[in-house]
Length: 127
Image (cartoon, rainbow, N blue to C red; front, side, top):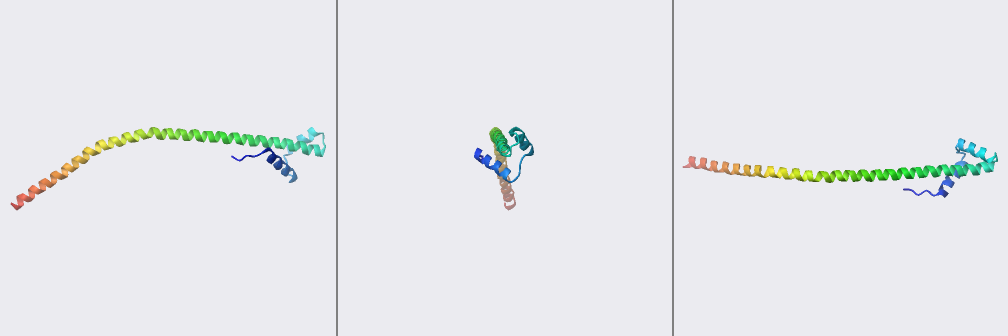
């Protein structure tokens, strides 16, 4: 997360005023509270604008922390789901092997018996 210092916020507010980019409502409020003096209005506006920027920065920081916490909780949740699925996968693998080994043995026996019977048939033709 980028660390934005208060001095950076004053620089932004000052640059905005220099470029004529101002919040009209905030400028009017500063004008009313300063008694109409241009310098006092500008100084009060800068303070108010920095306060506004500070609140925005703090809100963004809170949102970023909340998003990070949410992401961490989602990752934790998915890891739990993955861990919970592993025993099931292991169990299913065990079941497959329990079924596959007898089938494999039956196939081997079947092939062996086929060769034996082919041998008997070959002997009966030759003998």
